Image (cartoon, rainbow, N blue to C red; front, side):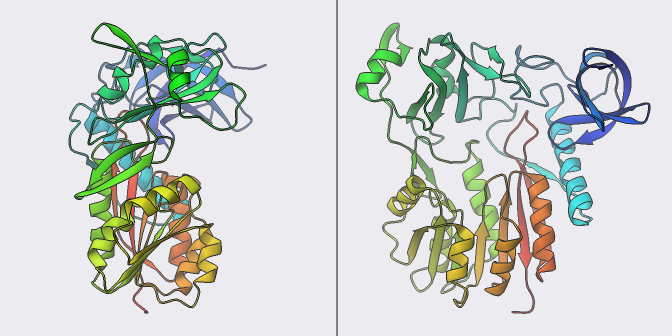
Amino acid sequence: MSRVGTHLELRIDGVAHGGWCVGRHDEQVVFVRHALPGERVRVRITEETKRFLRGDAVEVLEASADRVEAPCKFAGPGKCGGCDWQHASLEAQRRIKAQVVTEQLRRIAGIEREVHVEELPGTPDGLGWRTRVRFAVDADGTAGLRKHRSHALQPIDECLIAHPEVNRLGVPELQWPGVSEVEAVSSASCADTAVIVTPRGAKLPLLPTPKASAAVLRRFKGGRTQSVRGRRGIRETVGGRDYRVSAGGFWQVHPAAAQTLSDAVIAALEPKPGETALDLYCGAGLFAGALADAVGPEGRVLGVEGNAEAVRDAQHNLRDLPWVRVERADVASQLREWVDMRVDIAVIDPPRAGAGRVVAEQLAELRNRRVAYVSCDPATLARDLAAFLECGYELTDLRAFDSFPMTHHVECVATLVRNDV
């Protein structure tokens, strides 16, 4: 008989990757949301497999000292799935994320390392930071956010972790007939905003044209209704350099993350004038720009990115640096072509799925002295670090940053060094 919908009383023992806490019932593991370690809670079971149960803590019987009241009325069991830890103090959130990273390193890579998650500046309450928010739209044209592990929508009036300029676009207040998704974007460093829509049944999102804007996209400003004109790109400024990022492209969503991670990468790689540096999965060229300044005109920076629009952005952003070249290619394929090239340092910032063993092996063949690995997923980070260690690198440092307050996500920068080059 299925136990979905039934209730259990559990003592919460620990945390797991993905925003879950962990308890046990009759020796079976139960992954629980909306709980905290040490608490005794009543759990409604939402999913059952042969190996474990999932559930929501619907009543707290014994509360942790780390528990706080969630600031958002849409956070909680059965509601919006975007935030995992609004019921925990920010200090506790960072401690929990550090535990998760530590455990993933130990379990997957056999690495014993204590991790400290650093606070990013500018958002002391953990709210108002997310500069890109993707809204789902139901068949009636209502925009909202997905519930956890569900296609169901939670209608909202505003998102508390969204940047104020994202909320000012007023996406949830409007009707979006014929649209499946709406992405609202704001710049962290200027007044640029954009709205990108995905028509229902379409494979790719579209920037609104002026005609489409007048028909579908509206916002309220000063009491008047006016159409939104989508920009082709958002401008960001990091380290004194301006970057154009296509409105649907990738950029760090926390306003302080781009500068913080750029500084961390430079500290990890210790670039020297005249060196050759790689920026793999380079996106709009954030790290390539910082590396170009460090190695200078007598050095060179080679970027690799698979997305055509991101490559155009990177080439535009770095056009004044003739010692920088950005290639559109699969990273592993491009590294095979560069097997005989001298490379000193490399930064890799792969998508959530990670870089994989092949990329680690190919970088090892280039005999570069340092690698900075940037990751937003502790599990794939641990898997890839294990591959790098097997290829002769040593993990000398690992920094973690709270780039996504209120959620389970955490950004890490690992420093890998080879002493045999």
